[in-house]
View 1 (cartoon, helix red, strand yellow):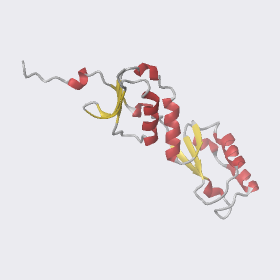
View 2 (view 1 turned 30 degrees about the vertical axis):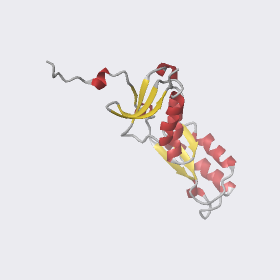
View 3 (view 1 turned 90 degrees about the horizontal axis):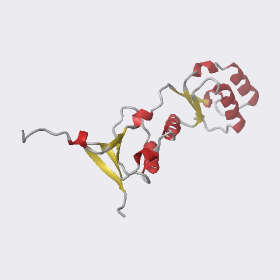
View 4 (view 1 turned 30 degrees about the horizontal axis):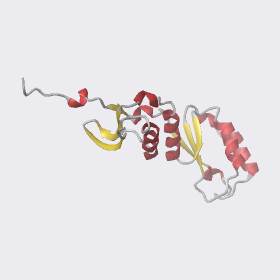
Amino acid sequence: MENEIVNRVAKSPLVTIDLEHFYPEGERILLDLKEVLFQGMILREKDFRQWAKEHDWAQYTDKYIAVTCTADAIIPSWAYMLIATKAAPYCKHIVLGTLEQLEIVLFEKALSKLKVEEYKDKMVVIKGCSKLPVPDATYLSISSKLFPHVKSLMYGEPCSTVPVYKKPRK
C-alpha cells in the first residue's frame, strides 16, 4: 500500500471561508427616482409627496432596496428621508446607491458578525470562484478584518491558492 492516494487537502490545517455563506437571501430591487420626476428632470415636492403616498410600498416586503436616480437631477435629502419612512416598514434593508452598492452594504453587515478571534494564528483561505455575486469590496473587507489575526491569508481553493499575507516571524 505504498502507493496509497492521500487527500492532503483534507488533512491540511487550512481553514476555508466561503463568502457565499454570508450572502443574504432575498430579492434585490432598484428603485429609480427618474421615473417620478417631472419631465424626467425635476422633483416637484407636491407631485413627489403624492407619488410617495399612493405608491404600493408593500411590494417591497422582505426585499432589499437600492434607491437611485439615473437622471441628471438634484434630489433633495428630504426626498430620500421620505422614501425611507415609507419603505422601511416593509423591506429588509434600504440603501442609497446602485445594486452593487447594496450588495457591498449587505455583505458588510453580514461580515460584521464574523468572530475574527476564531481565526487567530490559523492558515485561512478565502474561497474564490463564487456562484453568487460577491463584490470585490467584500474580499478587501474580509482581508482587512482577518490579517491582524491569522497566521496566513490566501485566496482561491485549498488545492490551489494565491498567497496574500503571511504573518512575520518574531
